[in-house]
Length: 188
Image (tube, rainbow, N blue to C red):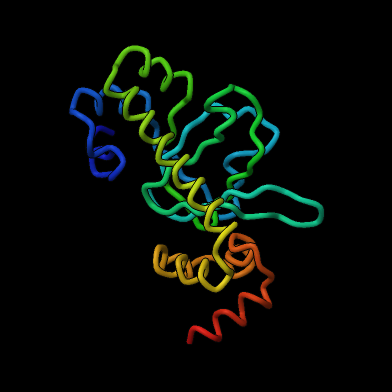
């Protein structure tokens, strides 16, 4: 497991000792496309790192799902509310492809945070990066038009355009599928 972890970008800053400790509590898992890995309104006990595949986070509204995040290889998947407050989360995380993941029980991870400063700092940096990315998405959605948000999405995640259903991309951008089709046609 140590060798598997050290080849994943998110683990590269860690020392061999920290990797060994994380490897001892990590488990490789695989789930098929369509699996809801994280459930809204449930306290989730695991933290995941996506090795391969694509996932999305969404919340259910009245007669619709709002996608607010996509994850590719190397992404972390967890419920923020479960992670921080040990309470049920608000998001669902669905696997959009067959996925291989590294699974770590949160209680094991928190014990490592208490015992090993390097791992605690690593976990803090992950949470900080996720917060910054969330803030960026909120600001972009408030101040950028749909066409500009689409172009940013294409530039930042060109693989997702090919691999994710347009209905999920439209939801993520905050537009209808018809509007997304018009934006895409204008960019050709």
